[in-house]
Image (cartoon, rainbow, N blue to C red):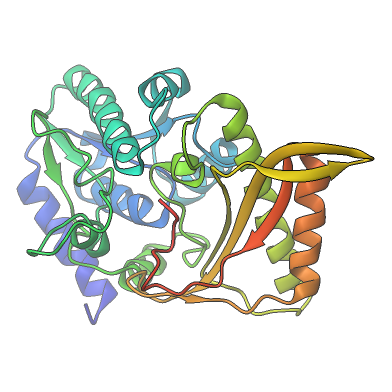
Length: 315
C-alpha cells in the first residue's frame, strides 16, 4: 500500500459492495480493529454497529481507555460485559492453542447472538496479514492460531468482512493516521488479551497478578521514555510464568511466581528485536512488581530473545 488516502477510498467502496445490509463490527480498541470499525462506519453509516467486548482479560483501565478512544474518533459503539463467559470457557485450559480456540469460539458465539438481534450475518473485523500468515495461511506452518482467524469455528454462520486483510501493521498505522485516530502508533495488545500472558491455567487471581505486572511494565517504560532514558519501543509487557520459584520474605522461605518482562522493537510484527533497556529501568520494574505483589511474585526476568526464533508474545 503506497497511498493511505487512496486505500481508504477503495476500502470504503469495497465495504459498501460486500455489505448490502447491516453489519456488526468486532472493535477491541486496538489499532487494527479501530481502523476497520471507522472504515465500516464511514462506508455503512448507521448500518454499522461496533461492539466492544469486556472479556475480563483486559489490562488495567482498558475499558475506560477504549471508551475514550472511540468517543474521540466519533465511533458509535456498544460495550458488552462478558468476563464470566470467557473465564468459564478458559477454565482448566493450559494449552496456548486451545486457549486461542476457546477465546475465538466465545467471541463468535457472542457476535452471532448480536448479529441475530441486528438481522445480519456480516461481521467486520480487523484481521491483518500477520494474523492469517501466522495462523497457517499461504501454505505456511501454523506459528500460533490467531483467535480471529484459526480460532473462528468452522460452524460459524457469520460471513467475515476483513478490509485490512492484506496490510501489515505499519501500513495499518498509516491508514489510522489518515482517518485521524489518536495515538495511531501506540503499542499493540493481543486480541486474546492477558490470556496469552498467563502461562498455564487461568483464574481470576492469576489474571490479577498478570494485570498488575503489565501495568507496572507499561508505566515504568513510559516514564523512562518521557525522561529520555531510552527510546520508545514497539511493544512492552509482562508474562506470568507457569514456573513456581523459591523466594524469601523476611526470614521465611516462600514459593511464588516468576514474571518475564518483554520489550521489543519492530515495524511490521513479522520480525522483532529485543530492546536494550537500561538496568536502572529494569531494576525499578522488578522492585515494583515484587513490592506490589508481595510473596506472590518473587522473581522477575528479562527476555532478550529476538523474533525469530521466539514470537513476540510468549503464547
